[in-house]
Image 1: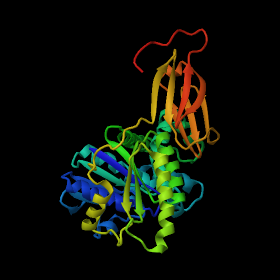
Image 2: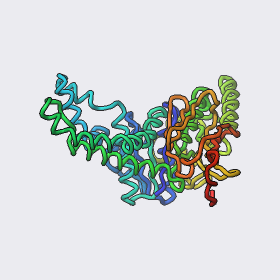
Image 3: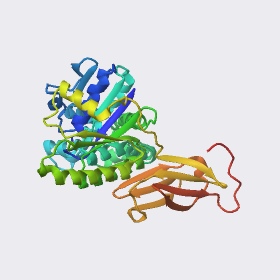
Image 4: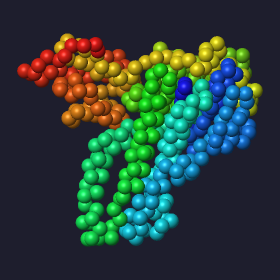
Length: 399
């Protein structure tokens, strides 16, 4: 199944472009489902009809769903939440307050992603389009599976064994609730689901992100940061959609200055993101609502391009052999050395860009080597690994 994620700064027309893409794909004969993980759902407004939490027929070959975040929260978090509520009750917090405090902000959006796994495994559709929340929330969403994976693989097994060993002793000494096997089983199940979602969304053969922007300075700046962070976590961006460009045939002097400004920003977009394809959509003279108008917008954005194709292929992270050692390369455009931090700890490499951090588990070959340097070559960060002095040569093979 082909998976497309749409994100962008709030207000740029992300949902409209995602809906137009869905309509165009369905019109080409692809069984298409578009789902919204944005808490402020607007898919129903785009199609001008009621959309439920399960696949709702919109047109031939087209279905839409707006995730009921609360129901996903209850089905995926209930057993974990019950323990946290018991813990807070023990500390003197009222039950209703404890229930509210036990839900981490943004958690409902995260559980919406589990539907991606269900739809991909179900095989009912050819194309799944995910209308994501605005960029900041989307980045938090997409980074969570890897963060949770780090916890599950390192801390969780030790914690589970310790609690199992100490539960009989602690239970005799205090009334403090101790997490039971149901709690740990629920955490493990959640981890498996999110890990499966992460594998799906970073699959270079099927899943890509399309960034929607307006020709405005602040919007483009946020898109550049988002593009960098997507590369940091291994997500591939195959197109930039520049929306709401004032058409050439608008000759009113009032818009003259705006057209000049937009032309400058459009050039900035091209210089910033090419060779990633830059798709454009004009500012229409009406709201693009309903299947018919969305079909028109889809033609405007894609022209003759097949909607479901991977429009650009890139490898955000790769390892290759070089002069007795290896080089790990990460695509990190728009980043200066001052904005980032890199350090090695055991089998892990920590890379921080701005407020986002990624822990890379190094392949075994690199674990036996030392980091000898890190430099930017164009928009790629190259981290050089070499053998410690006196060690055996690295095994030869394909890089």
